[in-house]
Length: 316
Image (cartoon, rainbow, N blue to C red; front, top):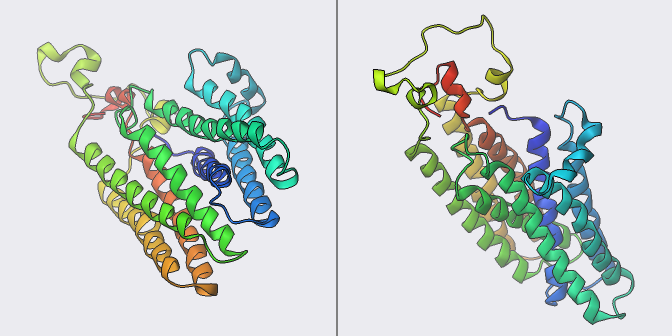
C-alpha cells in the first residue's frame, strides 16, 4: 500500500497525543502525576496539539477534505466513522477534566473523577477504532490480524509515556513510576513488533492468482500481459512495493531508534538525576519519533492488497 505522508503523521501524532492524554488523566486520578500547574498545563496543551494536528492531517489525502464531516454519519458500519465520532466525543470529558484539574481542583472531586475515567476510556476506544480501520480490511493480510489493534494501543501508550517523561523532566525530577511505565511499554512494544514481523514473514494471504481469477482448476495462473501501458491508480496506491533488502534495513532502523535507544536512555534516566536525566529523556523521545515514523511507513509499505493479484503479484 502507498504510504501517504498525511496518514503516517496522523497515526503517529494522534497516537502519541491520546497516549499522553490518557496518562495525564490516569496519573492525576491515581495521584501519581507531579503536582503543579505548568507541568499539567503543558502536558494537556501538547496532547491536544498532537491530537488535533493528527486528525486534521488525516484529511489531507482526501480528494475533497471539506466533505470529511460526512463520514461521521456512517458510524453504524464504518470504523473510520466510529474513529471520527470517538475523536470528537473524547474532547468533551477530557477537556472538562483538564479544566477541573488546572483551575478547579477542589470542586466536585467525585463527579469529575467519573468524568476523568470516562475520558481515559474514550482515549483507549478512539485509538482502538483507528486500529480497526486497518484491521477490518480483509483484502490486506498484513493488517487484518490480531497484531494490529494490540500494536496501535501499545505504540500509543509507549509514545505517550515518552512524551510525558520528556515534558515532566523540564519542570523537575522525572517520576520513577512513569519511567518504569515507559520501560515496560517499550519492552512490550518491542516484543510485539518482532512478533508482528515474524507473522508477516511466515504467513501469506489465502488469496492467490488462482482463487482471484477462479481459474485454479486449470493450473497455475500468472499474468501474461497487462491491459494497460502505464501504472494506473490501483497499482500506485494498492500495488506499492518495497524491495526486501530496503525493508530489512528500515526494520533495523526502526528497532534501533524506536525501541532500543529509547529503552537504554530511559533506563539511564532512571538511575541518574538532574540535567543528565532530562537530556536522556529528550533524546529518547527524539529517537523514538524518528523510529516510529519509520515504523509507520513500513506498516503501509509492506502491506499487500489482494488487487495486486490481478496485476502480476504472486501473493498478497
